[in-house]
Image 1 (cartoon, rainbow, N blue to C red):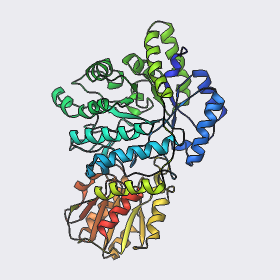
Image 2 (image 1 turned 180 degrees about the vertical axis):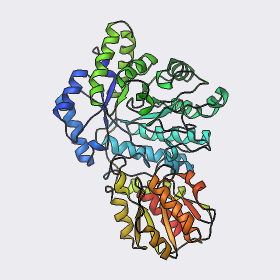
Image 3 (image 1 turned 90 degrees about the horizontal axis):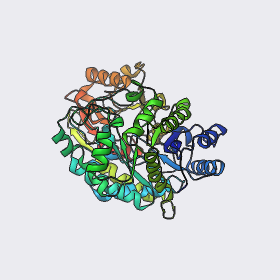
Image 4 (image 1 turned 90 degrees about the vertical axis):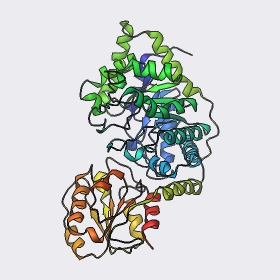
Length: 488
């Protein structure tokens, strides 16, 4: 293998839906091996495939194209791929065959676009406490079930030629703050932590997972240092104890859990020192080139052994050199069938309140997804779910705010309605959804049925007389499965 420089160990988030001069220059100058495709880069599968091919042609060497494609909450495609309901739905279904099939179809769809690495699955084991950064991204609270489903998902995806990435090592299911915003600290005793939260990662390693992503979380029982910068966690626990020989990837170094205490450039050097092979810098353009330069300097000054860089480069190169099967895309019907099966198995009636099911609502309250279109991807765009619901002609629809708190005419509509169906998009997190739920709690608890579509923990915020259904997802397949359960 030709010598690779320290810059090879970076995965950069790029800008635009075409191969811009700026992106090509960055990849050529740094020698970065990997490109992270985000929602800002994706319009259609055909355009995504063309982007990947154009970048390879203009940069003049193979590149590792990567995406966060978990299903459910984390989706980057508005159309053209199966919008799976996500891990919470698979966890409720509890069937490894569905998890395997989900991974398999994802792999076929991604590889047909030239994407070779998917940053999934999430293997964090939830606790009874609300976790704002994970929630429905997890398979659930049962470590053994998470391990079984995660291993099946990994085997299905890698069978179809796309490398999987188990995350977020060593497990941040017990976090109570979102690492995108600030640094979580998890205070669990070491025996319990290793027995519960480490188990799915051990199963992933046994299943042959190609990559593992670490977490921006502090675990005092394991090390006083944040996991991202901890040799005890990366080298001793992951490499030595679990025997992992694949690629260790950092979570995005632009997250608040990191930038709240140090610049991205310094974090990159420290993460390499801790034992990472591949570093994600998704959003800070200036830090991308500067981090590669700083790492190069650290190697030149002898602060980091060049041999360690070469070992990491060899591991990353194996991902690019891996033999992959034909990239035949599955039929849309095949993916839709698996997604629908998971979505139907996920729906549960968590409380039988004053409104009996099945119900005939005369008012539907639905989230105004246009308010968060810059943060989340929806099938058919921000108005796709609303248009889908309108086409069913069930009842008049009023949009509830998400980021904003002004309820406008909703209060009057609630007073005049006799039966209300409220699709709740995480009232614990979004002030507009909280305001709408508080209005219903005050004015209409006996005539409201709530469908939780993003956060199961919102159940505790509902008036005890409200009927509650948990869909464990807000993709169209999940919304459809919820309506099947709630309507005649």
